[in-house]
Image (cartoon, rainbow over all chains, first blue to last red; front, side, top):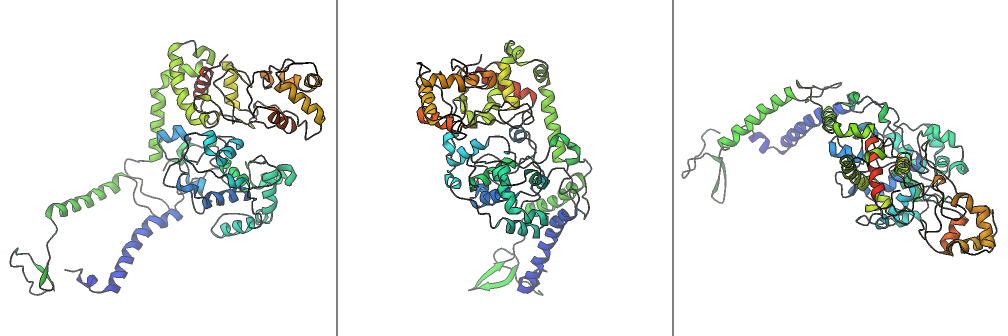
Length: 241
Length: 282
């Protein structure tokens, strides 16, 4: 009956519980921050451009993660359907991550570049116009809502607090970068933009060049998912864990 | 507790608690449960030794068998590749027109091609290739960029306006927006096109001057330039005069991704053969 002392003293019980859980937490969580293997060292990963980030915020706002995962697991069936398994590095600038836990719809970790912008727009406006068996709700309103430019820099500053390495230059040019990515040359210096955000896709994603809508942002985000790492340049053995 | 009370009926020790005359027994854990629990603890110790388990601040214990889920995955993918190698080797060596001559290879390509098509192509082109507005039908014999096995393979491999350096690309001028022809000329040529390219009016003149270079003098299309056939009643961006006028004013251009890099060489050949078989392969 040595546990009687815990059963009869609620403060001691609380301290005991705290101690036990802390040991579990410290052993499991702390090393993930200090081990070098946690995040793979691969080339190409960069923070999201302002337009992609806005699209990501819409993705979260609309709850896309409820039906779509962003996590290709190292299994044969997933590799044959979606491509190379996801790396921790590929979501290192995600706060919060969008791995998801449920696939009512397909995984989206490597959807970037798989379909055309036109398809994404048609599909978001009316999913059944292109995929008759789809049960996804329509998001036609995104094409009508103009994207808010004013809070772009604030979102980046917030992410910088939690460790996303946005430079002062990137934050200063946030609004301009939104215009450039959504309009191309008409918005500003495309080359300087691409230096800030290599591999970013540029253009009017929703086919209407006059304004940048939430549809532009979401499609820009979808079209870059899983495209940053060039796996032909990665030695697979360096990824083994 | 100095003197533990025992329950008279069962002989089990009590906890000393009693409510309304009901005493709480201190029944020990069943033996089988207890020993299973101890066995699990011993099992865990063995597991720590064999598999990756304990983290330190800079590394983790790798385990004596050096297990890695990603290495395991790579091994499985290699094994699958090896088990298919007899077939895959034939596909790697042969080009698409030779593959279809061998009935066994053709069967293999059709099965693989169907699976690949449904995952990768059907979202735009529809299951079975029935198409959707703005996304070409693949089940008919109207081909924008040619319907031979080789043309299809090239379209799949490098895409249409895909940004790949070997992409297929063309661009219809913005006749209306850029003011290249007058409104009257646009209306005339639209009438001529939807009227089945008949007659000798102003429409025919405009067509000969502006459209024939890509769509062919008879309007039957020039697949080598990606100029669509305008005489077959198949309309990618909608039928009728308004749709034709909209296309003349500010043309839409479809985009297809390049699949090289996303699909391997054998998959590209298989899916090209499948598409060719859907109805109108030339």
